[in-house]
Image (cartoon, rainbow, N blue to C red):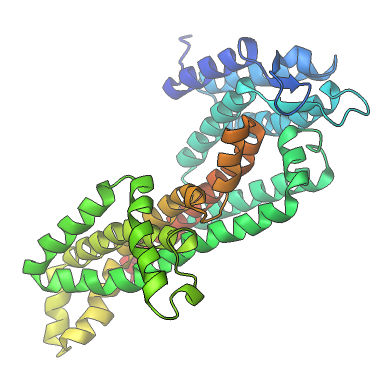
Length: 387
């Protein structure tokens, strides 16, 4: 009998083998800035838990390596991820000396690489299962609930990132609120301005190239440079325009960050609006004209609904992009999760960096999955309506 390997599974198994046998699973530090001491899986966990995790990783890697049934691969990835999530907390408790409040235990590269490998396996299985949009959202919700239960249970309390959170709980939620406000607020402003501008570019061909070229140029400016370029004009406005400072317009802070994110958001919204409207079938427009519909009625009753999935794709791009870019706003006093990232870089505290980076990645990941599901449901609905 010929043994058949899964191509992606070979990569996943190789990654998992490296992470389990060669890379450190956890890092112990005497305090938050002391040099770390690497610990393997067997060194970081109690006598029974270490071999158990190794066995789970090996079995899951073999399930990925060979062309096993999808449900077995799904079960293997879920069990492996659950075991990693639970036992990294056990490692924190096991490695922290009793009564020691200064020691820090953090997940090391092996843990993160294993998480990546089995998340890749899970994503591959879910893709092959061709889940409905609602099912994908349900998987996301289930994962969020599981992580929430682990946080509430205290299983991760001895990990350094949770100790950093405990010292900054109030500021964490305040900066998180600023981060989300910047990302969503700039997106909303870009939609309000970009949709009419995209419609205008679609209708007036001579305007299209000029507008898109200008927006392309803005998109090529590095984010830090754009934030810096906005300091002088916004500072001048705050000084010379009555009431501007009272509205929060300043050379540094939220205002330049908001404006920069807004400018970066315009190109995807405008370009996708133009592409979506241009892709409306001519037959649909001809039928609408034959029914006596005016240009305005055709735009809102025929063209815009058919173009909406493409427009929504642009909005998805903007939201994920803005969640990431909002991190840079901390450099000019704009707040957000970037505050912890740059504090951690300045203090050589990687756990503080993770405190800002992990929720940013989680927000972007969740936004992408939810909007992908909405786009697919919208596109399916439009196909059914036009069939």
